[in-house]
Length: 270
Image 1 (cartoon, one colour):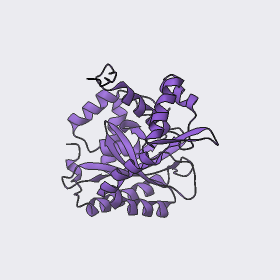
Image 2 (image 1 turned 30 degrees about the horizontal axis):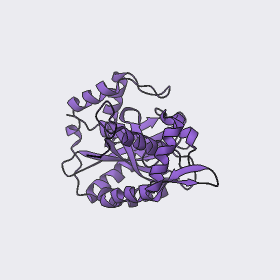
Image 3 (image 1 turned 30 degrees about the vertical axis):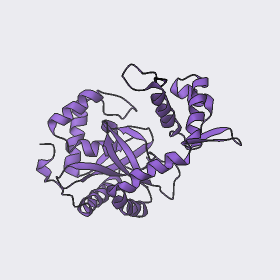
Image 4 (image 1 turned 120 degrees about the vertical axis):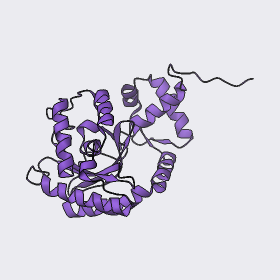
């Protein structure tokens, strides 16, 4: 015997691993580093517990401590493992030139996002050269019903799948512009199907706008979305149709590059 048994959490997972993953996720929210006390506050764990987990992760080089600023930072091993996913994903590699072209054509930040566990995860981004503030960052998660990329994909879902998402999401409000009434969201999704692009009009974060379009696989199903994002003063209402058409054209080109197939307009969400 002699083997130590890990403490289990109520849902059956290993508690120490749960806590380590929680800390890594919390650290990913701040690219400038994290103080131990801030991590404890953010995760709700005791400082002594946080320190014990951090030192263990440091030994495995998933994080590193900088004695100069007394901050904990993501380590090279976390980057190495994350890079494997990026290298393995043909879609990300294929999409990158299109994101760069979008950035250069519009001077705005271009993003690529996948759906995971009912949320959109930003997996790649090409920053605007004109502005430092970004709507999303690589690895961030946003709700489908209040984000342009999420709504672009959601508009392609069948009625049955759409009902499941709406039932789970409920009517969460993030800003004064969030579409909390299902009738308003359904009308917006119908417009997205007609226009070929979706808009986040300060629905997730006040002062920030995003325009997005879905990308399809060889079955004609949406596999991801591309978007342009910036502060509202740059993506004005007058500019949205221009950006929307550009995104729709680019998503069609990326779909073709991936040997995908654009679905007939009347087949979407039927």
